[in-house]
Length: 290
Image (cartoon, rainbow, N blue to C red; front, top):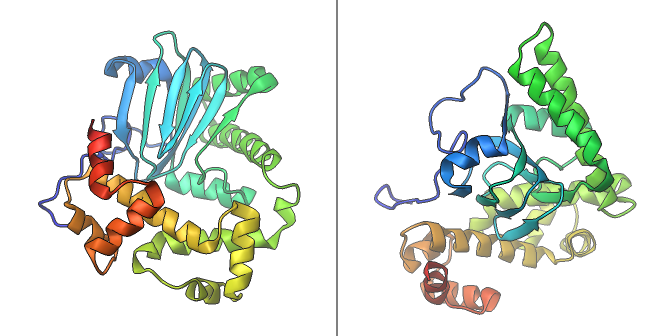
């Protein structure tokens, strides 16, 4: 993207802050009202380049939008916001809860130790009967964070690990029963990681499959079984997501969006976009601006 093009989606360390991380910790903890009250109870679209956020709504109402998924919350829930996810939140004035921000190195360390994608996948988990357990856990994290004591760092790490394990278990409950034993999950994760890096190149499915050491047919079968989409559908959905972001959050022309996504002709991009959304790029942009 050229330097002359505006990118209205700000990238923050914490909401409203573009400067240095405000604490020497790899963790930042605050209450939801503490920050949202300053912004009229609405956190406008933005993303974080190098941190994961866990938003625990204890009471009150909230509308949580992460990328194109919207959750209307009126009971205890925990929202995971991975790094680089565009998100926006609206809260009722009686909202109560916590926002826990984890620097990317810590999130990656936790994910690797648990062998779980829970901190890299956007999801909203209903708390149900576990709300007293999580209330106690977040209270302990907040107290440990705000009142430095001997052993503070290992204590915080331990509490965050407990929370990550709880999330990982809840994630497994919502996955396929044999997911933790299924080698296909690892293939799918590696495919998704490579796709994230190279989706603009319009590579054939066989290329992605070859990097995994499996056939294109095997990759397609895995994608359908574990994600409900074919490999081609996953590639197209990733292109569509980036196209929507560019059309809504930048001032790029449609031709520039087409070029940035690796399409040989703007007309081909327009047909691709309309086939996936039912709208032309121009119609989509106008609708979102309305």
